[in-house]
Length: 604
Image (tube, rainbow, N blue to C red; front, side):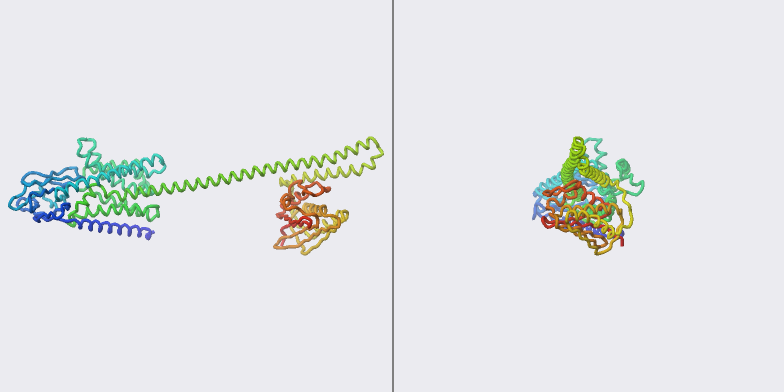
């Protein structure tokens, strides 16, 4: 677990170092002007940071001497928030402000301010604190005319971006209210927008606005923490998680505003709050949350830029105009906010991909269902067709013997002496009807699993011998040779009577479809713990299109003369073998013959 935290902490420290070093490099690339140093006009666009302020122990004030070669060259003083007024020749030229933390102003240095002998203007700072880190810069009038619009453009860009992000998050939330973190992103970027507007709104005479915008910075820092928890659904332990609820966050914001009201303004840079956000992101990285690394890098980049400005007073470093512009325009907030937006887009893209995948899967499932429905509908139609054919065959086979019986009875009624002649015919047809009804009843019971099979040891070699001997009468009458061979003696579990019935149906069927002079061979052997009984004939064979239908009820092979049977023998045999955990396979060639093979499990 500790290793999981080591990597994100190392990345955090590395990004902080790189960002801080980049800010130092950028800051050092801009020129500074020491008090008493002659202002150079080599580059009219240069903006100088002021350094080397002069302390006067008599007046207890700091001074800065601006020295020029030509007093007619127009210069400008650019300044942001300053804690004390700046005076020239006893007159205030730059006023301090209670609220204006985030806006630059400029004044043109009048040629009348110069000491004509020394070409010097003395800036007097009314305050006992060294102004080395105050946002006061010197440039030409043309440089100021370029620098200030650049600041306002940057300010407007940042303000517009955060406002659009807030609207973007709000629109996403209205369309997907189940994603609760989106509304917090919208609230967070809305607070950034409010903070950016603070420099404009505080100058307006709106008493109800000032308390609101004066707390915007603190609220942004707190909402920064909330979004780091919410976007990854990170929970605090136990009852502390209430803090992250909607009521909890509102309570904390109001409580913070109340506390902030009584804090001195010098303690309003709450950098320590951002480290709570970093801790939440480190935890998310350790838990392998999607996008946590991107947010950690973005937040650390923002924090690294803030830390440079926080450390610069300690290092006695003058902050360049460009870095001040980045701070005043709230550009430091964008890396983290943009990373949040990218992560939200990524999460939504993944959900869209999941939706597309589910839609595709649903479409495939629907297609499969439609195919299955079509197949089942076709199967039901075929079953209904087979049932109709089956019923028609039954009606036909019942009607024919009944018609014969009726004819015999009519002839006996007309000529009583014909009874002796008609009696064998009537008995044969009645036996056929009884056989047909018995087969139909047995087939129905087998299909409904209503036939109770006995479970006993059945020696298949003995059983097969009895069946072959019984069928020999039929083969001799048909003048068909019936051969029998036992390769292995086999024993299976099952119902001996039903197995005998199945074997007899198959052998008799083979004899029926074999022409006189032909041969039927029966063989018993074992292989792979199974008994294999093959019944091969030299009959007319079965066409390939009929092979998959021969076990259907009442199906008769096309092109074959109908023999004296019910047409249910193969169906009954197959059902009996299946209920004994076996199966029947068949292979056949027209005019060559057919071979049925029964497989039954044996007792080892």
